[in-house]
Image (cartoon, rainbow, N blue to C red; front, side):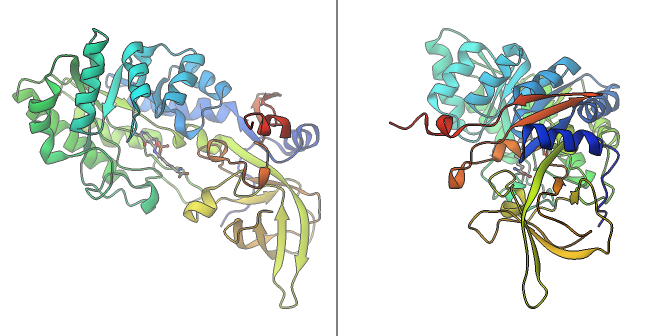
Length: 410
Ligand code: LLP
């Protein structure tokens, strides 16, 4: 496994300055990596009418959402909270699609009253509830139906969503009937189909097949007299966590565009990870080192599963590298967090140069599903975030204080 800092990670001096001034653990993002990734999607999709709706769930820190908006992105919100963040970041309702496997009455009311670009409905019951709320508000809502295409994304089972045994969407073969029975009621304007088959997908085949199925279904619906305006093909493109090559946004675009060419359907895509994942580094310090009699060597960091849950939750691999590697032979380390859980481990048997307490370490590719999935388990305050842009860097979220952590308790 490559264990050196890739070129995309900001220089060591900047990381050390941030660690010293802001303290660790801290998330650090590089704006240039986000810009680069966004442009790659935009250029790849340029031959076809499209909109790139950034999936806020990957990272919804306001400064990053604003950055993506400034680049031309629109928004994919997965909860009422993410809708509010999208609005505060400057998106207008017409730029927001609202997804979510279980939307509450309050969330639906808010989305209906805003008039979002579409609510992606997950069930016939939800279509009925959206219609009732739209009628009650004397308005009409644009809806998409989320289709479960029964495609294996071949990703981790926890983040594969397109199999017919998964809870997401409605079985493909029921969709025409559903549109006939539920989508043509007062209050609803059916405008799209929505498909999302999973996340961290590293083979283009499932994404291409999902696009094919969406197109075939949309043509059938057109035959039924239901005009589909666009196909929302979801997110899911993976990034390389271990240096193994993965498809680029350009290759992704080249894989899905043939399905929609000359169909008259524009497309929406909802990338999250592929836009922000590689841009983020979790900076942390070694706080303890110990070696057992049998030679097993532990490096305990001041970041743990509370700051980056992916390894504990999915067994996910993230490179961990010292920011200033010391001279000396590499040794195997168990790289662990400080929490009272054996799953709180970032790396098993990692070959690293000699480490000392207080060394600053970088956990790479942590920009997506890192900070947003942080928790305050063990009463650990939420960590700060820094954005590097060119030669400058600034704190975009400060560290939570213990008083803030306790502020909601009566
Ligand atoms: N659209 C929908 C409807 C989604 O459910 C998701 C992700 C996306 C778009 C964005 O997918 P992306 O392009 O980021 O793959 N916490 C997990 C990932 C969960 C993804 C959930 N849905 C992880 O850390 O790997």
